[in-house]
Amino acid sequence: MARNATLLCVPLHASSVEQTLYQIDKAKAGGADLVEIRLDLLENFQPHQDLEILLKDKKLPVLVTYRPKWEGGHFEGSEYERLETLRLAMNFGADYVDVELEAANDFISSVSGKKPENLKVIVSSHNYQSTPSFEDLRVLIARLVATGADIVKIATTAIDIKDVAHIFQAMMHCQLVLQIPVIGYVMGEKGLISRLLCPKFGGYFTYGILEANKQSAPWEPTLRDLLDLYNIRWVGPDTQVFGVIGNPIGHSKGPIVYNTTFKHVGYNGIYVHLLVDDLAVFLNTFAAPDFPAFSCGIPHKEAAVLCCDEVEPVAKCIGAVNTIVRRPRDGKLIGYNTDYYAAISAIEDGLRGSTAKCNIVNSPLEGKLLVVIGAGGAGKALAYGAKVKGARVVITDLISDRAKNFASSVGADNITMAELEDFHPEEGMILANATPVGMQPNIQETPIPKHALRYYALVFDAVYTPRNTRLLREAEESGAVPVSGMEMFVRQARGQFKHFTGLPAPENLMRNILTKI
Ligand code: DHK
Image (cartoon, rainbow, N blue to C red; front, top):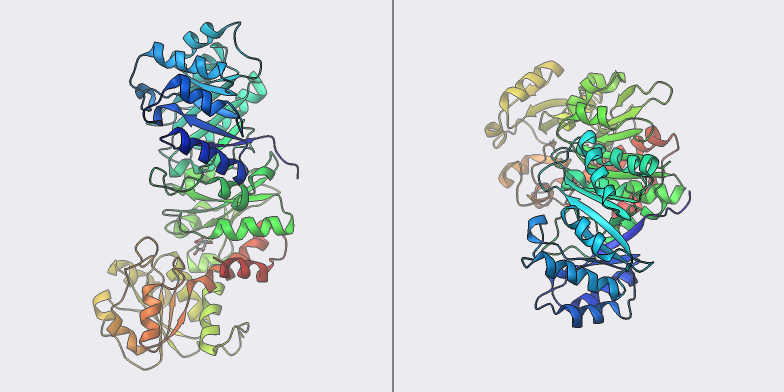
């Protein structure tokens, strides 16, 4: 693996010159290659005086942007004043100046013959509504290039994650056909991968914020995330892209576990959050060889069965797939389920009171009554696994028809959520929550009132963010053994890692990573 040439740019959100200088120091200490100063965010901005201070003894290369209101910025004055200020920045030694497409001809012709050698003009286009098709982007790029730009920049907005593919295609077009440096990214959570995979598609630079703050969106990557979590310096054209498909998905700890593990074992891969609405569309868009395999989370595990070309028998029986792998020889999508063993073995170990591996012959689940809340993908895996181990299973779900249909298909009983509150046919029952209730950010929620927990000997929660959910806390207070979804998470990831890479999973390492967060 070689270090890539993509630069890391920190966009500064400072309202004063002092703050800007302070943030430049922080960006430098954090490993940034350049900063973007947004002049339109500075209060009481005095162009001559402030630019001289900001650009005099630069600690890092500086990109100067003076974004007008008509392009999503804050500057409301005249175009003459704005472009004059950018010319001033150029003369004070800015390394890059960002000029919007509509203003680029004026600016570039006005500096013709006077432009310092080191200055690069970025001609930019921002679309805050959507992402055009690749064909339309090609036309746009031709207009950007025709201005005489040194670098072109296209920022669009993701309606669907598939939009990012248009930007990747546009970036490749700029490099391979037009041979012009390009900055491309897609705004919004669904566009996150455009920032993380930027070096794979040869982007000139990608943005990482200094730290999460009130102005930043929760999904915006920080400089530290780019460097430490995504190992972005080492992402290149051959890097294999893995990720967890879901909706919502920001809670998943997959990126932390996989990226750290990839780094540790020297595997050229990156693992990202994939906020997906339509699984089939996603899988058709992000294909081999760059996107060889995915984890599949809520709510797509059942749809994944239908999207795969082949589904291994156990996953087929369960009716849910959480691991999708493209078979190298023919690109066919193969579906697996690593959830069921993960969840069941975690419960078995909880029952045994140890972390010893489960014993298929003498499962402590045998003969026990397991109540599963949730008849989605995770609930199906739990019910299947428990039946295999000889447990009796009762299913409940917020959608009572879903519970009824699923229960009858697997030979289990079903009860309504209202009945669950007073359900205690016997002592020593086991409860498993397989719904997202209680997951971040809704950590105050719980799928069952506390008083109903006293009937259970063990309570398992598939939710693992937070590790200690309200359900688990109340279960422990009621005398039950709590088993965290983190156990299921690490075990299902262990199974997946082998499917993804063909390498044995370093389980202890994966477990250690999770205990530290
Ligand atoms: C959660 C699950 O339940 C797994 O089946 C997926 C996903 C991964 C997560 O990353 O949270 O494989």
